[in-house]
Figure 1 (tube, helix red, strand yellow):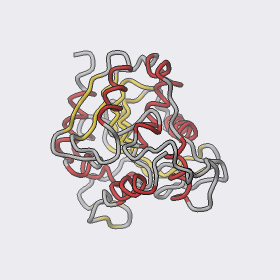
Figure 2: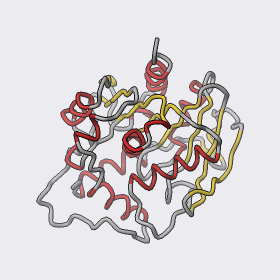
Figure 3: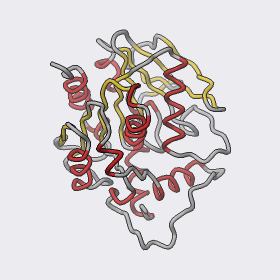
Figure 4: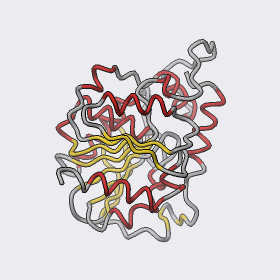
Length: 264
């Protein structure tokens, strides 16, 4: 599992990624959304915003964060794409239930959001937990994805640098009243994608990691890229786990280079 040091590193990386200049939940330099609301999915209210027009692009944030982390990419990405951002269940402005938070459940939430927005297929960009959610969708519902950009994610708990299989303090994966405890338990127990599942992903995929990521191992990242058929490996220069915030312009460019380059 990811022991205390590991979860602290990841939580701090994600928590400190939230941008300055937020007024009433919107960054002052963001475009005006075309649509804002709460989608009724799986017994929760999932907060979302939609920007721009064009081929749909779904951005999924990391654990213990929310959709505001994408504020520096939205202006660029929404110039030629319909960009959808949302807060995962129990985080940001989205509600939760007493159901245990798992990656599969959050994947179903996002599929429910796409259904509510009448979007059949989307390019998905996932950071950390968002990337794991993207992998879950690619494994179980590949027909919903046109492409998948995964950054700083792991396929199994041992992909985390702080993983310690002998740690006796590993929390049980169950519902907790405190969402921080619940996400820490999630990190300790999931995901558990097999090599066989990764090898059957038919979606065009790019696996990315910052060149000094503090939470996910390079070796594990290379394993995922080598196992998913045709997947590209991208090492993002001069950034760590919080790459979308550390280099917003470079990150947006990397996403567009991949998403818009599919089939060219």
